[in-house]
Length: 65
Image (cartoon, rainbow, N blue to C red; front, side):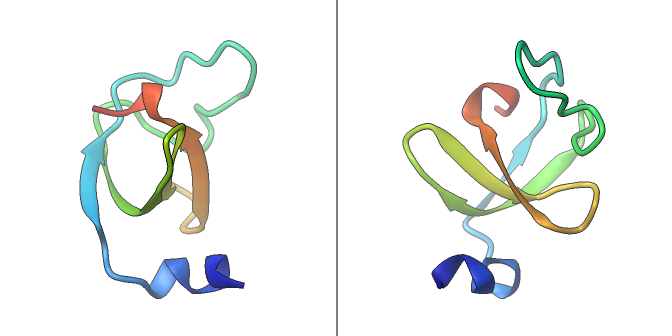
């Protein structure tokens, strides 16, 4: 299970959260607009970052720049 090692994995890049205005999900509890996050994995649709809780979370790319 590769996702269990993502937290300790090398950071791919850093991204900045632009907004937390989600249409369907509540992300303002775990992301802060204007804060920079370390990207641990990325797919076509999602970015996996260490969020405000200190855990890995997968979020749509639309929240980041």
